[in-house]
Length: 429
Ligand SMILES: [Zn+2]
Image: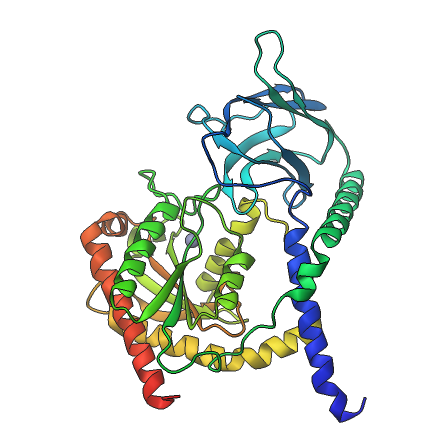
């Protein structure tokens, strides 16, 4: 290929990649369903019921009125995903912990942008034989009835592939134009005019259907990190120097790729993902303190590797269909863009660690790295902070204290200020 063809080839690859990602996102939306935030006119899901045996199981959701819904299956592990639009959940406490027949248990909560999601964990491959709304009759309220039958893995996968294909085709039909019209992504450092506000994206981990780590006393990571993130947002906003965006503003799950895309499409200068870790067994009581992570292909140690695997499981917990890996050319391009981003991320992580020291306990090893999916924006410097350990009682006490949160959020805000001061000094334009 002649040398002057190369730039064009690259541009096409980028466009194709963006289009592919966009289509992959759209493919997950039930065609024709109109999703809207919870409102007064919503149906209320008041109860759920399970019936049947290990060959045939029926899952019933009792509603106050009819809703739009979508049902699909996922493998590894086997799950049935039920998405409902315009519904409020008002289920009795503890619902879903006990299974019956093919269903070993179920979880529910909000997932963006689909609405309310119920995930049935099934103990073998199943077929969704029927899924329909039974209208109100004879004093009975309307019900969504999903009938599952046992099948083998081969049939399960074949059915899943066929339905994914038809969803993708429907999405292409509905969104092909939008995918082509998607603007090209800005490159780092070139998009800001002098004096423009820096854009900070704060990413409170987990949310909605995914509680994250839960402490022994029942404190949920998703709530701890959300409270911290909103406090940090307010502190940064008060300086008047930043535009601050949260990846989620409610108790709702946002897929990891979507969190990355929020950073990219808003032209973020910095992306901070906020989490609280946990360790199993004897380590749990011994290990405490904050850790700051950056992205790397090779994890800095086994613990970092295990943590990234756990955090990356969020999408699986929330029933998000993972898009196929990008092709090799894309990987090379991303690699090049990432070199600068990687150095900036490490630079911020080090400033953050020194700003935190003395304000809270820090784990001895300080900065670590691993393959966190949420840090994978090639052009946005990104770090993930684990505020402390939900498995350590002293840390949980700190994490729940608003005085501690204030002190640590101020230290993070301080680090953000130092990071940009340093960048401006080096490159005033
Ligand atoms: Zn987490």
